[in-house]
Image (cartoon, rainbow, N blue to C red; front, side, top):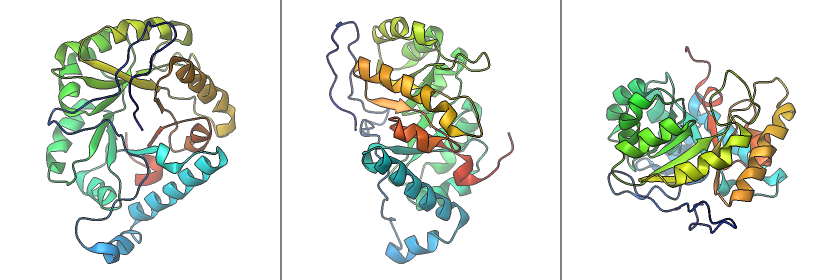
Length: 272
């Protein structure tokens, strides 16, 4: 879980690990895969939820997370499952929430702006993650809506979020580890300089790094991508690694992921 700021050898980066969201709610914990009790209905309701498609999927993914963590000598509590809800409607999100999920990720600002008010009655309030590419002209809305922004992929985006944040906003810096021209993010060789620049901006707190690995039928092929990012994270003394999606999250966990972004394996195939 999020620790106190780590003093780096160079002294170049001073990164806080303490934050509260716009409502004053503590979001620094970014909880792991603990299954929460339902507010109403008790154990019977919880058992019934496992018979739904989404409930079964959530239970299966938690088991897979636990196995991957065990393979790596880690605790499942170190890994936060972020349910990616792009194009998923509010009733399906409520079902996932009832199945125990507390972290949700959106990719599109307009969709999130329309959807989040429909889910405002959920208790305890879920943690909302921005996991998609962010345009600078939508940084203000992102700062207002999201508890954690995974996709700081340029200095302009970081500066825009800083400008529009009224309190410390936790962010992850996106790294294009594989150097794919179709993906956003800083090149590996540019990441340290970018982190130094971002760390000096007001109202931002760097929590870790994020990457999107190349898609492949064999997740083992992208293990080196995850490993490179983990080695960089370790060398910087950062806390979080957001990496791994429905098709490769187990390898990502074995290589150190603390946040996995899973949509299709929870909600099924969706229209773009």
